Amino acid sequence: MENYSASLNNVFHALADPTRRSVIARLGSGSASIKELAEPFGLGLPSFLKHIKVLENSGLIASEKVGRVRTCKLKRANLIAAQKWFDEQRAGWESRYDNLDNLLMTLKGEDDDT
Amino acid sequence: MTLKLQFDFLVDQEKSTITIKREFAGKRQLVWDCHTKSELLDRWFAPKPLTTKTKSMDFREGGHWHYAMVDPTGQEYWGRVDYLTIQPIDNYTSFDGFSDATGAVNPALPRAKWHVTFSDAKAHTLVETVVAYASPEALQQVINMGLKEGLASTLERLDELLLVLN
Image (cartoon, rainbow over all chains, first blue to last red; front, side, top):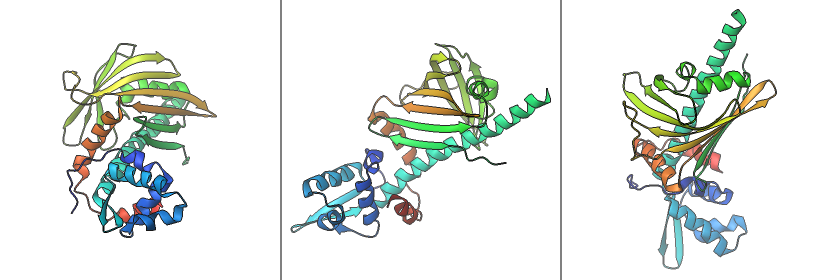
């Protein structure tokens, strides 16, 4: 199991970039080496490693070097936790604004009656 | 009749902001009133199943709104909005913080600065709310507060999430 007490740093910054989102999506189907992960992007290795570093710092992925190969894996619990926070915030605003829609309808109705 | 109204929700961690844009089917004056009169705020501000209860409201620059969100068991979550600038019916800025029942702001938790802007969008009104924290760390603190509660959640929605990210 992942360490649930690990705090997430800059998760939303990490997820703001399309390359990094693709890496996360790829790691969802299993661990992969840096070389495998870099292939689809046509980026130089140094640029790609910067993205990996951002993802590692965010707590969304972890990497491990065995011999000459560095393998990355997704820290699933952290990704879910971040998504849950985002969903809850969004849902809170949606619910609040649904209330306001209803209130506006009611107030317009009251206005028509007078 | 159901209308598809615009709704955007964006977290920018580098700028330490959350931006919410939403269109409302109502005239700007009415939408403004709903944001600035406590008897109207009480009827919508808290997300369901919470309700809003105003303790005091003084809507002027330097004044504040002291309110609670109340859950179905009666538990009260107190908040205090301090108004900084007010330009009827265009925009206002405020500090949004957690408080206690006496109205004292909790200094241990970050306060966010809100910029709320109202503009006409044809027959509708567009409201943009930018919730800005003092630093990425302050936003992170708020995120982590929410995360603590959700960390033991199940993993079942991950596949769905990964599809969205792809």
